Image (tube, rainbow, N blue to C red; front, side):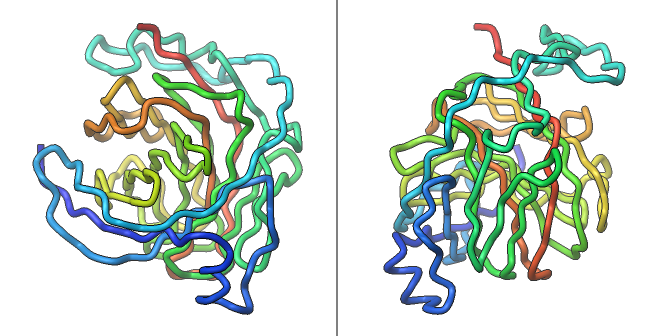
Length: 282
């Protein structure tokens, strides 16, 4: 497996530290979302397994999203392809997810909302805005009861005005008392993907930015993100096509997170819709 670059990043602890770095941008105490403040610290070469050692960093207190009864499970409205035996999704009925969120409810995902970022329900979609073009990300988590270990999940994302590595993220196995651990899959404005691991006080790049013709680039682009986790096997899927795979077994189960990540465009806004989840059978 080809070598990848890894980034050590720092996750900044609490509102006290945030106030020291950005006194005018201190967020209110928000109990409905998780903040992960990541600051680029160093760059080293990844080993063949693509799993770099974590770097020391601090953490942020997250939120709890209120519990709601999940909506009825309804399959995709468009035909789904027949899967080949070597496809990691083989055996799943892609026309019938185990859980579906069409974002008709305003309570499944929420927050945070302050000067730095806005995550909110917006007329049947989840809108995520990152107001500052920096290395900070602010993710919104779903309810605690939606905890899964081995899974395949998809979500549709529409990009707003963007450039370069402006992007958006979809997190799985979000876990820990502070909701500051999880695997994240990110797509960028210029048509690339990246996978990272946040684990209590450290962040590591498992797959560095990799361009793919399967990812629709540019402003107003729409992509269907797919993230599959089967034990320590993690797969990148875009618009129905398997793009990449990496091994990492540090995180076992958890729930989900969504976020925008501005690198070049302050006020970057993306829209999430049609979240589908399948449980992998043992």
